[in-house]
Length: 486
Image (cartoon, rainbow, N blue to C red; front, side):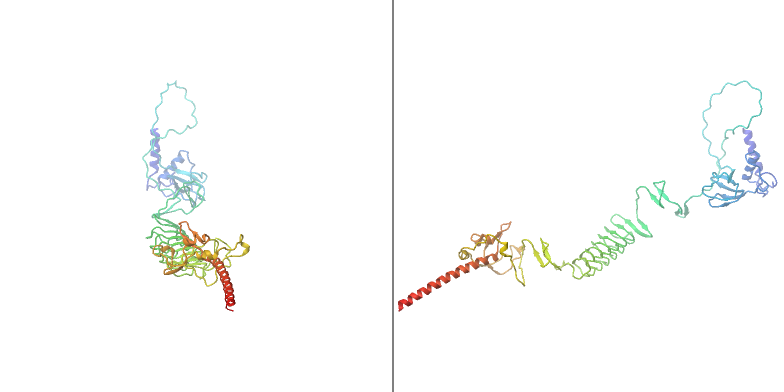
C-alpha cells in the first residue's frame, strides 16, 4: 500500500514540473509547454483508466469560480465548492446546473481538499489461517482499498457565491423573499413572530410608526422628524402634528389634524384637518371634520362638522354642523355667556313655536323679565271639581302685607335682590291659605303670588256687595230722615 501511494505521488510530482518544457507528452493539455497540478492529476486519471484519453484538440481554459448565468465552452475549467471541474458541453449555466448536479455538462478535473481522518475503530479478532490454495485465475478488479491517511490541510478556498451582495456596511438581497421565523416567505420580508422596533418604521422615506417612552406617532410623517424634544403626545394620521417641536400633552387623530402646531400644549384635535392652523395655542378641543380649522387661539371648544372653522378668537364654544357664524350653540367662557340660536325644549319635544318650552317646574334664582305677556293655562276643559271661593274677604283680612329686605349676606347663592322688598310671609299665609305655600326638601317655604289674584277678586266682590248693602241702608235712612223732617 505504501509503495502504491509513493508511486502515485512520484508520478504526480514528475508530471508537475513548473516552468519545464514538456510539450508533446500526456498532461500538457493546454499546449503551453508546462504542466500544472490540475493537468498532472488529470493525466494521472487518464493513465489509471479513470478518465477517457484526451483528444488532440483538448486545451483546458481556466475560468475561476463557477458562476450562474456565465457562458462556458467545452474544456473550460472551473472550481465549485473546492473541487475543480471541466466542461464537457458548451452551455450557459443556471442555478440548477451546478457542476455536481449537471453530470452531462461537467466532469471532475481534480478533487478538493480532503477532510480529517476519523478515529480508528477497534481491531477485531484474528481468524485461523487456512491452507494455501492453488493460485487461481486473475479476477476482476476489486473494490477500492481503504483510504490512506489524510494529507496536510490545504489553504481555504475562496467563498462560494452568496445571494446577498455586500457593500461596506450594507447587505443587499435583490431577488426573492426573506423569511424570519418561516421557511416559506410570501413577501419581500415575511416575519412569523414578534417584532421589536427601537426607532422609527418608514414607508417611502416617511415615518409611519415612531414610539418612544412617552410619544406615539402613527401615520405617514405623523409627528414629523423624530426624535424630538416632546413628551406625552399621541399623533395618529398622515401629517398629524408633523410640525410639532416642543408641544406636549397633545392628542391629534385624523389626517392633517394639528398639522401646524409647534409649541401648543394640552390640545385635543380629532377629525380630518381638525385644529389644522393652530400653531402655539393651548387648551383647545376640536372634534369633527375641519373643526377649528382656522383657529389659532386658546381655550376653545369646537364640536361638529366644520364647527368653528372660521372662528379666530379664544375661549369660544361652538356647536354646529357647518362653518356658519351663527352656530346652534355659541358661548364665551371668559364672559360666562351662552347663546342658543334656535328654540329650546326642556323635558319636551313640542317646542317648535317657542324659544323656550319647559315641561315641568322651573326655578329662577333672580329676576325674570319679559317684554310680553305671561300666560297660565286656564281652559275649563282642563279643570274639574270647580267651586266658588268662600270667605275670600275674611281670608284676605288675615294676611298681612309687609316690607322687608333679603338676607343676602347669609344666603349669597339665592341671588336675592338688595334693598327694600314688598310681599308677604309664607308662614303667615300657610295657616289661612295652605294652597299658596310650597315647602322644599330643606324646609324652606315659597309663596305663589299669582294664586292670590283670584282670592283678591272674590274678596273685592264680597267687599263690593257689602258696600252696596250699606249704600242701600244709607238711602233708606235718608228717606226716613226726610220723612221725619216733613
